[in-house]
Image (cartoon, rainbow, N blue to C red; front, side, top):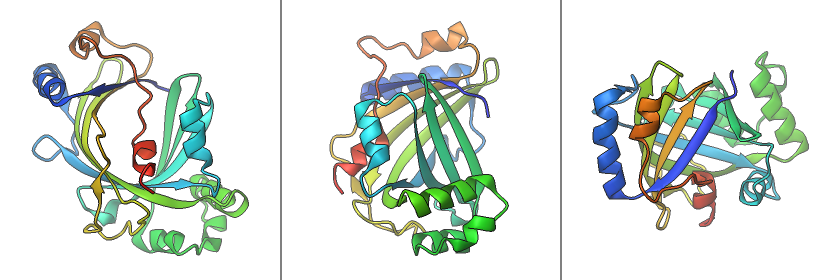
Length: 223
């Protein structure tokens, strides 16, 4: 997986509507989208000392976090993901898990992971075993995704961010979540070697600057 550039901007509802119209005129809708959007549920992991949270808040240059994720309430397509950051660039590794495997992780039954034959699963096992990594909180939100082939550009509009507080009932699509306070909408722009000028121009908003906003950190304020 290639290290990718990433911009984040906190935006308001007026910005979101404006960007939605601009992006639809130039970019393609992501194939996962249903009526232009999809619902994301993630379950983030952290250590007893909140290593991932503290490194994000402190702006540590080289950091990582693990999460489970599925889309549109479909628990048949769960992914284990590892997000890494280094020198301002980002990388994501991902692999599928079954419902039974996820249930075992949630119940701290991790021995099966050690010889799974999947490096990412085995890495998570090691960090659960030696760093005490455990599921911390559910993060829900709505995403409008757009793609542009030159530069392998991906632009997303994320909003309606909700937190599961201390809940980790990840396999229950109806698990109750609540709004994460005054969490803003988020514009994310990701690309490989270059960002085409047409996209750079579209995503420019007066008075908006690159942000280090983290959905996980926003939701951890509440549990």
